[in-house]
Image (tube, rainbow, N blue to C red; front, side, top):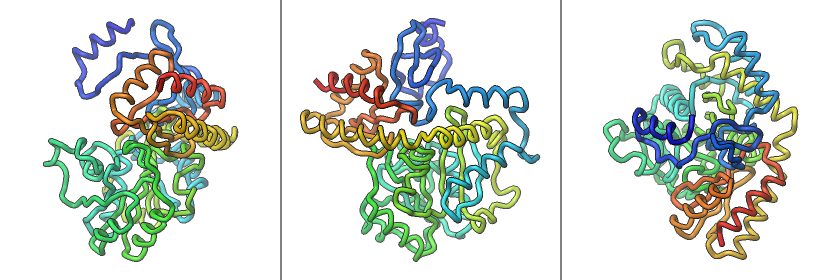
Length: 393
């Protein structure tokens, strides 16, 4: 189907809730996407940090083909072998005592499940979340998303239990947290908020406050998890053990899956009937999660993220010294941000790069967000930087 037909059908029959770019892709290979005309694009967006193995990764494809011939879906009325295997694998990469997993279909659902678990466990109702944080668009997750642009016009669905602290400001947290607080939600790096990392001092201070007051520290690793920052989870860089971890995106390498992970004690409050999902953790998506963890481990892909990511930051910092349009460089691993001086310039850079065969993303108005597949090579990083440098000029 040609692009004009795709655009016409989409305009006629879909909700118009996305501000789409004039692009449609028909296939992918490695770190590249191809449109219907055969034009090749180097992809540094990865489905918004989802396609951790790029496209058509042979071992992942084989795992999916094998599972498709066996079993795609059965109800959670029954035991699911692939679900059990993925929970076991997650147990090997999460810090003790995080031992239990609930599978859902997305990051927003994972955060909803985490909040329900926290409220039920603590028997409290107040939730703290960060200004400029992002935790999803379903009603409870939207309430925890500290950005009014996402909440506007949906207030009747958002409870008044949410209170918003200033990210990286421990005194702001201290002014809000108390023994009526069930959970504090936090990201190690605010992805949608402009690729803003938390400081180690702030994260450790939050952990101590939560421990002292019996508040559950819920770490949203939806975007930062599954190796994106160079470790399995962003909190691993700081040695911090949350009470609940949520993740999604890269866990399925394109399959829709999310996970809530917590301790035996906390998970025990979620008894039969307290929460559920028809599709969550079905055989196909959990087989995908198993393949993702196995492939990343077997091929030492985190080493690639750390090495190329560090060099990428160095390249961006050097370019910042040479070009006044770059205000700041932030991030870690393969979650990087180059803040541009104006939103108009950021969009112009993105559009130039797309026109020259490189896909990049603008978030929080004026930050160029770099979130490529975890298999992105040093040579592909150089290709990206060549076009990015041209765009700045």
